[in-house]
Each structure stands twice: as structure tokens, then as C-alpha cells.
Image (cartoon, rainbow, N blue to C red; front, side):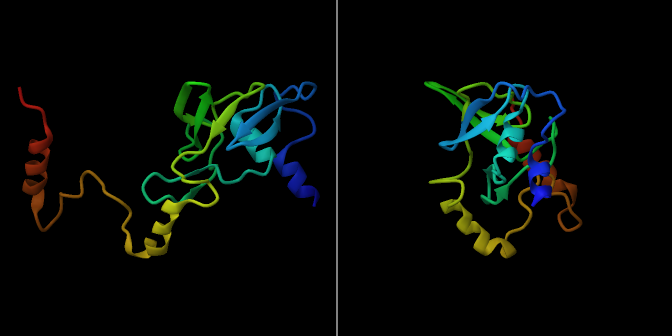
Length: 154
């Protein structure tokens, strides 16, 4: 299974310092990482594919991109009493002792009670879009009514 090993972590190259391993934690599990790694690359190298759940329907989310455009890999960074929610795992550089947890999952990422929504997913639409009140039946008047009710008036 050589492909799987090379797909997760290259043995040379890149901008990481393989001479100094550091330890990071994600959801209580330790992962080996190297200075120069991002949290996302360290988790992928440790075979952690599932990184979060969607906010509304708790659908499983993994990595789709490698940079700032990544919409799914949002984690919660923790350090004692300090917390930083919605950190992009692709933008967080690892350091020794980095602690992070998944978001939008309870009690755990693998077994999320909110994932029960997936059983009814075929009956759920794509979600609420702000311009859905514009349409051929109601016209733009219905949209303008709702737009006017939400604006601040002085």
C-alpha cells in the first residue's frame, strides 16, 4: 500500500523541518507533526479525514482545498481559558502543544447526535437563500417587503 503512504506525507521536500517532530492534539488524539506543517496537513498525515460537521445539517466535512479558500476545515483552537473558534485548519501553523477540537459535533465527531438530520436529507432543500423571496409568483414586491422590514430605521 505504498500509494497511501506517499499520499499522506512525502518523505522529503516541501517547507517542513522533518528533523524536529512536534506533537499536536485534535479531539483528544495526538498527532505527529513538523514545524512548517499546517494543522490540516498534520491531520491528513495522521489519517484524520473527517475534520468537522456542517453547521445546519451536521453532514461530514473534510478537506477540499489547501489554502485560504478552504470552506470545510474549521476547527476550534484551545489554550487554557483562551479559545479561537472557526480557525481554518489549512492556515494554522502547528507548534508543539497545539490543541484543537472539531466544531458542530456533539458528543463526538464520529458519532454526532445532530447527524440524525441525514436520515431525512432527501426531504431537505439546499437551505435558505436570502434572495428566495424573488420569484415569478410573488414578484419582487414580496422581496422588497421583507427587505424593508429588516433594515434599520433611524
